[in-house]
Length: 262
Image (tube, rainbow, N blue to C red):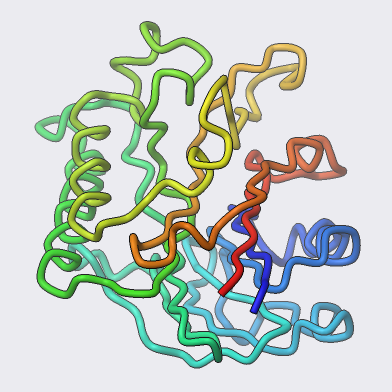
């Protein structure tokens, strides 16, 4: 069964409902995973989404913060969530498609501004979150699974606009990249996006602080699509919809797409 999946940190699903609708109309992914929904589940504006055929929803929400949702034109089974690092945050949810594929939707903590857990509690929480992800995948190796989301780490040198300048900036520090690699290894995950687009600079996030984000192009690839080793060869046609960063009242993230034949 071929299907296309997209992941997008939407930075408030209610505030940006119009551009979610635009994406669904114009790009029509079968499954759309959203992060940072900033909404209780019962306040997610499903009416317009359902009118476009996205009648299935598996989500976890919070008022004003965090929140993850999986919208789908395909039937979904809710298979739960994990509260990594005991933060009490809605940062993970999982759903199973009828073909047996489990989709994990993650929103990893950003980690604050200082890359030192001794002075920045949020950075410590991020590292602990990643450590518990690693330990879970080691204890319960995933099979026939796709992991997507805003993982808040740009691992490769060409995943950021300037590797040397960002080595001490949260999201690209060596300790974060090492934790990221350990999570991947623990679950036998494969980087679908980079399998399909192996070379060149590739970004999915551009700061709101830039007066002209497009011209400055100081981006980072923070949003990811992974697949377990048993299905990684079924993935193809990856792309990042950069144009969405320039839509009206945009998120600072762009959607990342991948197609699977399973």
